[in-house]
Length: 241
Image (cartoon, rainbow, N blue to C red; front, side):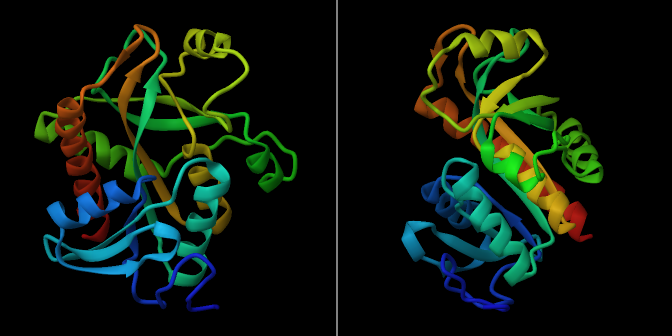
């Protein structure tokens, strides 16, 4: 298993590019592969978690669906790194907006992630450690967004273990502390990347405005998704170059 396949990925070492985008949704993974990459081949079908490898501007890029929540995503992050040699993971996902400063369709570049995840506590041996992205990737994302005229807000997010929690009061508390959005994977990505010695970045589109109780339309989701992937692929290009 040192070079694949693994229990969750059917490919062998070399099937994944060193830079891999990691959305949660397999349909989103397929959409990215079919609409942004060339010379695409499917490298994973196990459990419906579609994975693809292709080329973007001459650079090998992979995209692999990782599911929802830290426990699911952590499996894929770890296997991609340990058994397939992935060195850079870029999350392209969605989140709920928690701040008056963000609205539907805004893109957040996560500068860090708080969490209530028991899985991350276990990974950190019970310590409370900061979950942060790779600075060079973060800086690159903000520069690319500015160059292309895409508005991206940099700030902290919160990774929750539960989508349907016992109370919504936590949203107000998080927002009052400057947390821009809530989602379910980023702290896991940053923690595992730090433990494994690789680079990670997370870009998130605000698909639900929790403050104003609004939900993005399907057409708006498509337009803002394009901007988020554009920034992610720009970061990948800079990283490879």
